[in-house]
Amino acid sequence: MKNYLKYSLFVVIASMLGLAFNSCDDWTDPESLDLKNPTLEDSNPQLYADYLKNLRDYKAGEHNAIFVSFDNPKTIPMKQAERLTALPDSVDFICLNNPDNLNSVTQEEMVKVENDKGTRVLYVIDYNGFEADWQAMEKANPKLTEEDALQYLGGQIDAALALCDKYSYHGIVVDYTGRSLVSLTEPALALYNARQQNLFDRVMAWRETHKGKTLVLYSNIQYLVPENMDMLEEYDYLVIKSASSTNADDLSVKTYLAVQAGKDAVLGVEGGINPVPTDRFLACVQLPQADDKDKIIGYWNTLTGDNEKTIAALGAAQWVTQESPDFSRKGLFVMNVHNDYYNRTYGYVRDIIRIMNPNK
Image 1: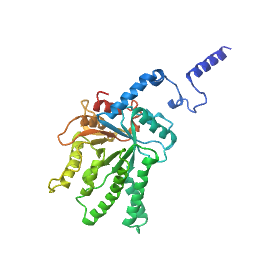
Image 2: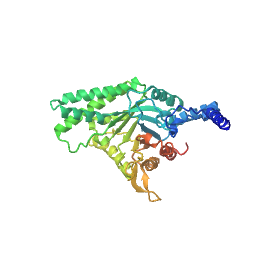
Image 3: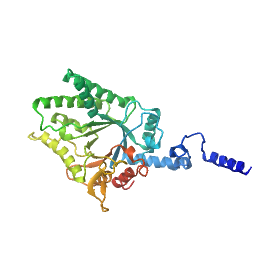
Image 4: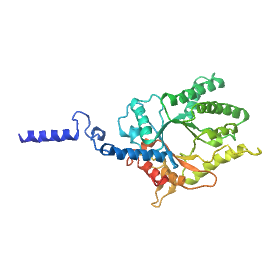
C-alpha cells in the first residue's frame, strides 16, 4: 500500500510538471522534457511589448550590425539549436544556408522574428557552388561549350534570385570569390569577365525590381573587373573575405585592398571617383569548432593576456569598434552561428554584441 501511495504521488507531481512518460525513448535526452517555465511574455505582456518596441527601434537606428549565417534544417526543427527564434534578439540579419524547400516551422519563424524583433532574414546565393557544379558537368562531358556554361550558370542564378519572392525573404547575400586578374591572359580574362557579368547583370536587374530589399556582397572586391565596380553603390553592405584571417591587421589589409582596387579602376581618369563605397564594410569570421583540438578554425594567431589564442569573433568585434581614416567599419558577419548554440547558448555571439554595441 505504501509503495502504491509513493507511486501515485510521483504520478501527480509528474503530471503537475508536465512530464509525459511515453514522450521519449531515452530519458537522458534533455530535449525530451517540455518544462513550461513562465516567460516575460507570459507574466507581463505589456512589459514584453515595450521591450520588443525598443528592440525594433534600436535595430532601425545607427549601430554596428551583426549578420549570422545559419544552417537551417530541411526538416521540421526538433531542437532549439535549429530554431530562428532561439537566436539572440540583437542579431540584425539571419542568412539561411539552405534557402529553398523551407519547412513550415522555419517559414513561420521567419515572419515572427521580423515582426516581433525586427530581425531580417536573408539567404545566401552561393555562386561558387554553381561554378563547381558546372566544372563537374564539363569534366563529364567535354563537348560542352562556354555558351552552355553561361546558359547553365544564368539559369542557376535566376532560380536562386527567384527564391526571394517565393519565400518573402528580406534580401540576399551574393557569395562570389573570383580570382586575381593579374595572371589572366587576354582570352582567359575575356571569359572571366563574361561569367562575372553574367552574374552581376542578373543581380542588378533583380535590384531594379527589389529596391526595398537588403543586398549584400560577400566577395574579394579586388577580383572584380573594373566594368563591374560601378554596381557596388547598389549594395547595402560589402563583406570582405576574411573568414581565414589570423589577426586584426589582415582585416585592415583586405579592406584596404578593396578600397585600392576602386582607386586603380579610375586611375588616369580625370575627375574619376572611387566606385568602391567606403562606408559599409563588414568583416567576416568563423566560430570555434567543438572538435578542433588544435584551435585552427575560429582562432587568430595573436595571443590573449592568458597566453591563449584569440577567439577570431571577439578580436574582429574589437576591430569593428576602432576607427580608420579611409573606410568605415559597420559590423560583423559570423559564419554558421548554429555552432555557437551549445557554447553558453550563443555565448560568443552575445559577447560580440556587447563589444560592438556596449549600450545594448
